[in-house]
Length: 172
Image (cartoon, rainbow, N blue to C red; front, side, top):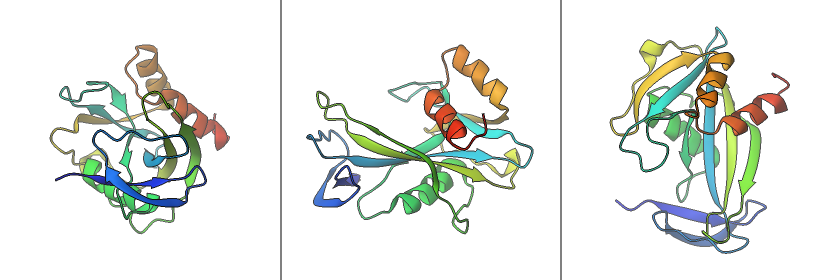
C-alpha cells in the first residue's frame, strides 16, 4: 500500500497537498514532517535499535527510532504509532512534547523536512520490547557513553541530533 504524506509550509501549516512518500520531490517552501524518539529507562539508559541489513541506508547501524508523519496524522499520532510499530511499547497515554526540532532543506534532491525529537521517560525493560521484522534486528539499553562509542565507530545514526536534544534539555 502506498504511503501518503501531507505537505507543510516552514511554519507547519498544511498546504492542502498530499502526495505519495515514495519518490517525493519537494519544492522550495514545501516540507514533510518526521518524528524521532529517544526512550529513556528509569536507570538512565536509552533504548537503541540496530537497523536491518536490508535497509537501503545505514544498514546495520544503531539508532533511535522514528519515521515520517503520514497524511492526516499529527506528529504526536505519528510518534505513538512509530513507537508501537518499532518497539511494541505504548506511549499513547503519556504527555509528550518535542525536546528538540530541526529542519533540513536540500533543494537539489527535493528533500525538505522538519523533525521533532521526543525524549520519553518510560518505565520498561528490554523484555517489553518487540522488534518488527525488516526494521530492526537488535535492541539494547545503552548509556550515553556507549552511544558515544558507537558514534566513534561510525555506526550510530542521528548522533549529532541526539546530542543537540540532550544539550537543549541541559542534560549534557
